[in-house]
Length: 259
Image 1 (tube, rainbow, N blue to C red):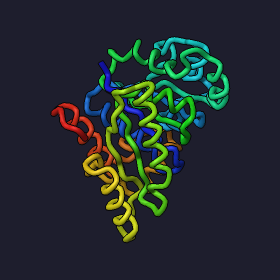
Image 2 (image 1 turned 30 degrees about the vertical axis):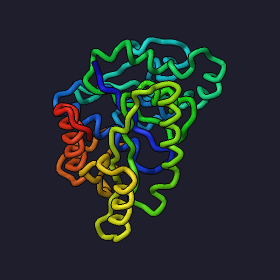
Image 3 (image 1 turned 90 degrees about the vertical axis):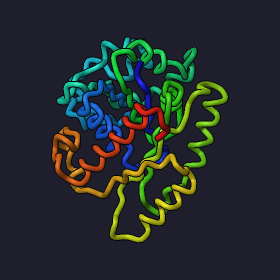
């Protein structure tokens, strides 16, 4: 049975999709069977793994709105043990369409339950909002992984995210836990980055991963080539950081320890 991890932060530009794509790829390259689920209407995780969105017969929209089974939507990527459920722009209208549906918060959970035995890990790349689509992800997930950018407004909105987690626990998914917090876009040249890391550690304690993702031009370039960083430039600092994060996530689960 797969461990399902939602990657979410309603603040945009924090490296959420970069983390989803590259963490999923690195864990797949460790020999784990991984499914990446793109539920962001922008579909950046989809294109970031080399999938042409316009050529997809189905997308996650069809799972949520048209009740298409996940097995018919899943696509292969360039990494043999990494597969993806793609997203396209029509997902932007799903928030409105879901409102009138029965069991609207259960759609993604039910779809993933049908395929979870085929994978070791399922990562869900959430949109930068706390609407019904993200709610579906939090209801389906075992844990929540939060990327936080090393910048001045890093903690802005986190209380809202954690309040949403509490509401989901109370009403939908009592087992939901915080998987961990990963600091992204770290700039060693600035004192501010270090100060932000210290503040986040005060907020989340031992949930903050030891691995910190640096600012990296190569991480920014890789999606335009449709490649995870480990295929685009496996020797760059960004690739090494995501490999280290993958080790932390996998080893934390296999030893039964919290991240």
